[in-house]
Length: 195
Image (cartoon, rainbow, N blue to C red):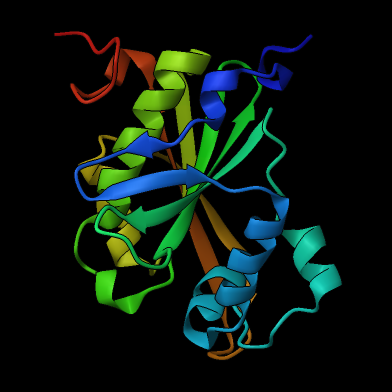
């Protein structure tokens, strides 16, 4: 069996950070979170480059649901209780690699460092329990907050996809920047980081 298709029980456990509990989401909960994202025109424009809501069928086809083997989603729930403020996705891909995505749905948490805190914990969890040695991510070139988050986490820019999408509201092409973090460059917050 391919390494990224194994079922590893520890990957389906909750993860604790200083401010959050990252609760694994099942397929139904994932659909509920995608619906919240789909109902917010501003977030939808950032992720899909359109303000037009997607149908349920399109949502299920476009966004990969968690399967507990290679695709995982964690709800971001404040430690003091309350509703989920967003979600983090991590997909295991070939050779000991994983790709990341995070969406903060609650505007009260924007600009408060939630993505960095959550990603550090999720990445450490997947290094420890799945042996991930490479993380990747991509972000729209104009999403400055996400660009800075990747840099804070120690990621290196490794490529640009020019005009790979189109923003239907602003009528402009969209570039994406690719980032990666290799095991030999792991920062101190990850297990196995070189001193």
